[in-house]
Image (cartoon, rainbow, N blue to C red; front, side):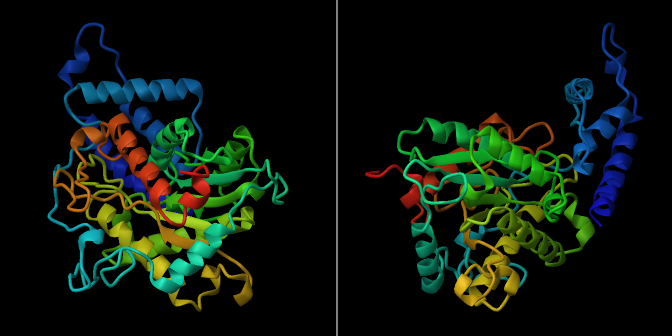
Length: 383
């Protein structure tokens, strides 16, 4: 099924690209201008999405071809209408009375942006259990607390910026090891199976940072779907994403037996996207997948979402919202003034640029320093 999903996304992009690449390209005939095989460039672009790796030579060819296409004054792919704003209201600004396609507001529903009391108490109790562990998962004075990122390309880029900033921050607890497990090119389907190659990738990142799977106690997770339109209208595509996030969480809890908390985020603004990877309204609507999964856990009764050993086998960590990243493009978010400008994204309009990554990293640092379920173990004592 995963390969089928990727194949259909490939077909959409291939048809669009080939139509574009066959158009006259006078600039490409300029003296000394390198010619490119655009079919090969697109194939190389999509190989990581299909779970394939590129050689160093292929990566170099792809980068040069992608840059050359952008310099021709066109996006590196089929052009799409750019939306600097959509008129949609951020989920955390919607009230209990507001509606979006029959959905009310608030990150936790009912206009609430903090967990209900029972869930918050449970989350605080789990947070209090997070402590330095040795490589075998035993409490140790000189042990480590691993915070691991799981997700796609933007997770890799944004969490990388967060890791660099947080590791320089003297307020961060020395026991906390931040590991960037985000894997470029893999959407939520790639993380939905324990057999996927993304998990060995994450394991390698843990080893490189000197920690083990048994020291992973919290994760930041952000998933998306490649070409979500093929999964149907809302809420069908959001329900599909919700199921894939759950599968990813179940696998994470299997691989990381001491995982207690998962902080989930949905996508940032998708109105600048130049390729049909994950545009609006899908970026906005991905928040309802995250919220729906958290609310299902709060209701109880779903074995795959059980985090409490007193109620049966533990299959998932306790779920909470991480930073809510969506803002309506250039329209400032009422709560904090957050905007996403065109320059916050790269040539394709989907992946965050250096500016966008730093913006996302700032939101992550502010979150982990202030959230009551994170700051107790994330920050050095006395901060």
